[in-house]
Image (cartoon, rainbow, N blue to C red; front, top):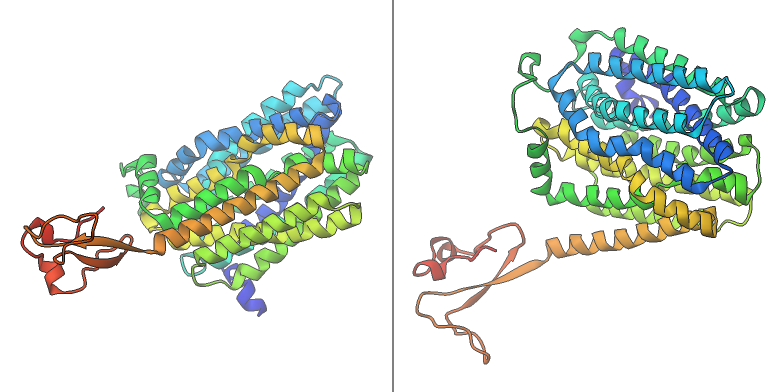
Length: 458
């Protein structure tokens, strides 16, 4: 069981990658907590300002990640990831230098959040594509689940450590540690053996024109099995994954807790997501649409429970269940998309996945921020859960609609037209599945007297 769960760690390059990412992602989570706490402190606990910073951080992801995925397909991914992490470390160091003095203003945080979003637009699709080069297609589902696992370990430990550091040394110290953590990622990437990587196509062919972003979008639009989970993820990501906005306010305004208790809320959410990630490490087959929709229903119900929990202790329990639902839904969506995508389009489709998963947040941040400011932090969680359940119900109807039989009329030339009193005997009702052309016999395949005898496509 242990070997099955961690089998992709047998690959040396992936082991180095995971170690570096543990340090880097932990530092990033610490920085996000410190950033949110600084915004609330500088703005007088304004949910609107917190939503604005969240939007500024994710808007570049929404606008630029598809182009970042194109860069990842055309340039050396290892080198590109090195540069992206080095720039992110430099940004964190600059914020530390400003925060230690008395001159820190909200606009400094705005600039930093926007710049970090630009870096993320390149780093995220490059990192996901590089994992495929490190482990190959057979180990990709396991490596993807383990990546989610270390991400959730970092999101459990990072906020808790940040809460302790903010209370004892101040928020500026967190930005310094985050800057140092990026050095671990850069070091691990440079220690990889390039000869053991398996690029999807030869490096000499990387810059060949292949349709770029538009070709990737057309590919997804032609694939209902890819389009449905991505649309569902967009809705859930916009309204359901609102924790960066709701949890700081839940801790500070609803329960009146310290920074350390705020870290516990985020850690509870991450603990549930970690459990979901470990559960999915054994997945080999592509999950069905029903699994994706069922996971979104579980998440929506748990999020509503989190928003209605009356005490801090019950909120921790509900958030753990919410984290499990969110993690299982995200992994089911990721695996359904990755395992169903042609390798020629994988980089661009993953970039679209990142755009939706991370970039949909700003679309809901401002309206939810106003709702939370008027009705309290719990209302944001309840609203997100209700919208998720509505989206899941709509997705289920779409699946049923796409699979239902479609009846079409055939008939020979001269057989006459249908009338209000019924069809002419020459017309035959044939049942075909949507998206196929099953004609039901040789006569249907050959046609019966010209155009009228062929199965009419829609």
